[in-house]
Image (tube, rainbow over all chains, first blue to last red; front, side, top):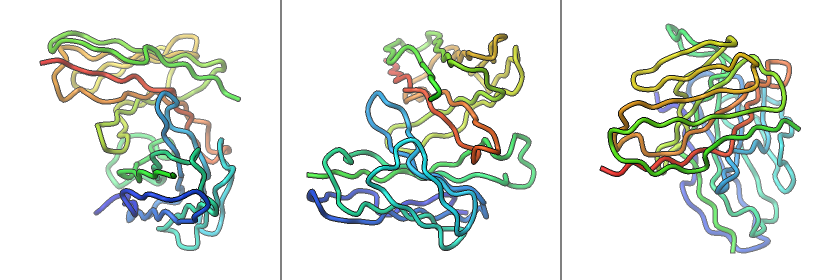
Length: 120
Length: 113
């Protein structure tokens, strides 16, 4: 299993350009999340989804849109990129855990490798 | 919103030393989590804590869920170079809140050989 994958790994945009970040998971997880990571600020939740066709706002949703048309994919869109959106973006998924896993379910999130975005 | 404070922000230690970091929250929560992020990668869950006072180990790592349910500690014993990375505490908001996590600001750990 590949786990959680993110595309692209790195991207440079000019202010005002648009782009879509793709997250894919092959663990049959119901829940998926998009975070951004900035120095000294930890991981902040942008949007999340508790199932195919559903999305909800997180802590910092402004300037972003998301879609979950297929269970395994969660797309993050920037309609008009701004320099303040320069960040590292992480996707995560959870629930249920693989057979044999002894920990909890919903609280165990599995993260992708991240997408580095630079907006000039 | 939920206030979650993690300290210290960074630590520079020599190989073999013990490390301690902690998190405090403004509210009571039932689940504390500790994640580690290796350079250039996504965070990975290290330890999950479910009960006040619970002490859980994962190899050289030991984490405790504070008795007040508002804090948690992570200790690393006999540090090695591969312990380098960012350590995050996180709080679990519960299933009715979309199973969201709130992360601390992170502790950047540097281990000198």
